[in-house]
Image (cartoon, rainbow, N blue to C red; front, side, top):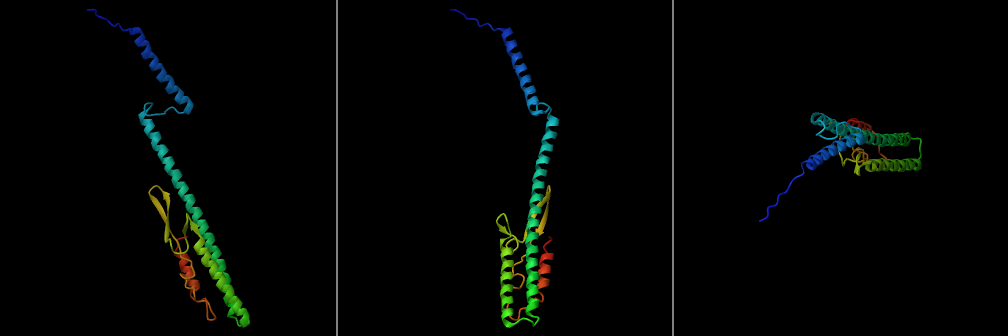
Length: 196
């Protein structure tokens, strides 16, 4: 029987281990150079890496909160603009009603004023129904409130008014005996209760 003996080349094995070690160090230094960071993974410094990751998470959550606040501001600006348009229309309705009830206008002119009042109230309803955020109507009563994230774990609730003519008690009241008594108070209480 022949016995074979396998000799190992200890020098070659040692050189190979040294090559692996140098390659790992080169890779680590290349990673540091390419990212500009001293710590790229937990092996570099576990405690500092954990602190960095926590800071990165805080920065990311602050960006999300800032974006939410920006969206909330844009939403409020849009709602405010729509409410201002409705208030301008309402002011015109009041002017027409005052002219109509002054006794100076003829019956034909009163009928024209009533038609214009009807058209203005329809425009108010159109504004209430078309003021939307992410496809949801904001001023027609389909959405009562919206929550906006203002800080981690904190939110601000914005109550939305229903500014349709039906909710304000205007719809169906237009006619020769139409007066604005009480409607102004309804509008003011609706807008004031909305936290805008």
